[in-house]
Image (cartoon, rainbow, N blue to C red):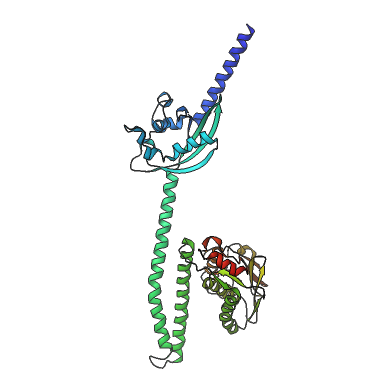
Length: 404
Ligand code: ADP
């Protein structure tokens, strides 16, 4: 008597537990299914029932392909090896059942699920292996992310269009600008007749503005190429001291014009490294030009290069106006320029993002330290071996030469 009462109680508790599990299963907004080793559906939640418009009993005991209204499964053949063999959903469920390893938020595109024909659907798939009564099952969680994907695609498309537009406009502007600059140079040289002082003054002003515009266009084009990975790099084993001296020599003339001392110190142990010579010239010229630009007359700019372990360390420091603390983390962002009181110092705000991208392609890092009204130091550190992945077949030979 007592035993029967206990059994009834137990049965009641089990029923209640299973009912509440069902309620929880149904309350989940994502599609949930429980499938066995033969990919037969043993449980299905309301989200899937709503989406397919089918009753519970119509789905239970059917294959997952039928349950999710796969277009291929609905054809007479039922299973098309060439398509079903590549089915991401099917293959992942089978794999989870075999390996008992879960799959988290795997995004995939489907042209066949839920009877879709023309439009494609995107899903995020999560799979968990479970064992009930020593039988293996997979819990399939299917989240329709088509709206999010569609929005992402549109953003990517418009970004590409924007980039294409900027790139086309920049290219189209570059040619006439070169012609204007040439024309101005010819007139300024007096080839077209002697110029009055006032005329020369105006033409020089025009030339400075044309130069600024060309610098901006070149920066925009460079930055776009770097960002999209279209910029080609020519990594070669070269003498780093020669490259540094070449950049510094050009900048010394400009520093002198501004009464700024440019001091260069290169450790003698520094030898060859693998890097792109022209791009490094661009990096150094950019940092030196900034150091000169943001340092008042009679200031000092120092460039030091040394070897620290297997990395080249280059520091470019000045005792100029410095960068406010709150701006330090933003100066490598595109078009970011520090707002300074007084006379505007020209620039595009693209110099440092370009420098950072180039250093990044060399597998290096760039950082900055600064104190307002005291000065700024940019520190570059990059491996002498260069970026390993971009080296070609001659890599070992180059490396050997570099390291010896
Ligand atoms: P810009 O064309 O304005 O020089 P950059 O990207 O090269 O653009 O630099 C971004 C900003 O970082 C500059 O506008 C400037 O305010 C600040 N900056 C860069 N280098 C220095 C420096 N050596 N000293 C002080 N400020 C600097």
